[in-house]
Amino acid sequence: MRQQLLHAAVLAPTGQWLVQDRAESPVRVLAGPAAMVGLAAQIQHRIRSTRNRTR
Image (cartoon, rainbow, N blue to C red; front, side, top):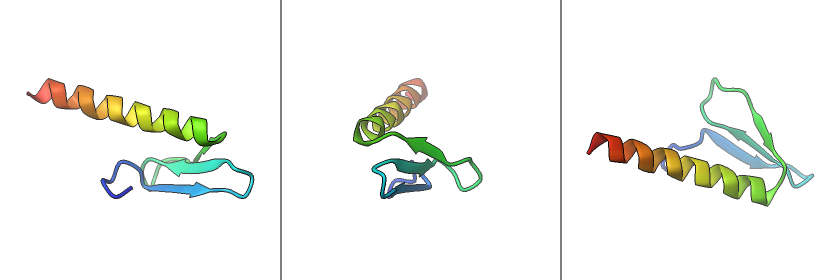
């Protein structure tokens, strides 16, 4: 969130993550730590592919 890649990420008592990309976007529910790692990988891929197009 520090780099503004996510608007919010909150760990629920059930172990699920509640995630929002932007303030106006719907809240997504991620099943657990593995899903959060998958989301991080998607964000990194998006950043790297965008960066390569602008070079």
